[in-house]
Image (cartoon, rainbow, N blue to C red; front, top):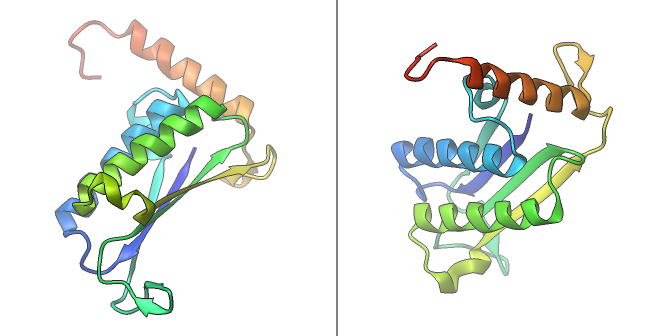
Length: 154
């Protein structure tokens, strides 16, 4: 049940590029959380895009004239081990550098911030959602996928 917030200056991405990047970030988040890549889990992995108006992204007090990205990934506490966090940061950074046409030397123009929401502090559907509930839902999704006949589109 992650929330990804992507922030960058206007003009950095085309509308199609933004959509493709949001889809890739969703796929990567599910991978590193260990959640099944199903319609249900994709549907609760939200990406909020914040495209800053021209002149509203600054460094050293001056408007930036190159692509910069900040991604804030909010996940339930315990969803990511240190190894998974490192993999997520590496993969998100690579995806953002590619989307923004950045080289390896531009790594400091991509920030990935992981925020862990303490258990009992995430609510949806009018109730508190516990990490254990999400683990159970992931297991049920895996079992459902394993039970589907090969080639099924259900």
